[in-house]
Image (tube, rainbow, N blue to C red):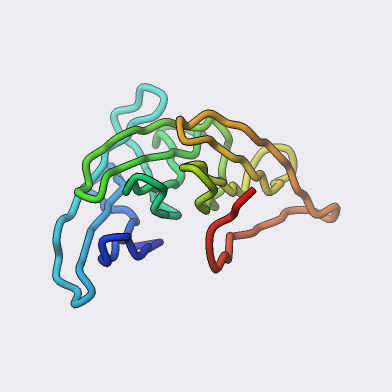
Length: 168
């Protein structure tokens, strides 16, 4: 797994990737505090009409309404087409919503909850000299903020390290 979160029902959900031959898929598992498995899920996503894909979860948070948001990166396995995905699931692991953000990512993506079901997405982009991109989405998944940060001397990399909720 690449990320984990403690849920409001006092369990832990982990997210990462699983693989089978040429496909790498998002993997999530819910365990209780004793480590007993409550469920496991594999989520398949294919970009650009490809029959193979590589998707990896990079961050997970619980949003309002007992919904989890998993974010990560993926590419089609054919060329250099890569993107960032947003996957909302309920506490039972069922898909509620998914979308792709077309922004090249070199392997970095993280997420933090905002107020009223919104969330912030942090992406280490491969576009335009590898800036850090901060985006905000409302509860419906509509982008409401797009901000670029870059170190003048070259590439920049960052992850959220938050003790709690961002209220902006």
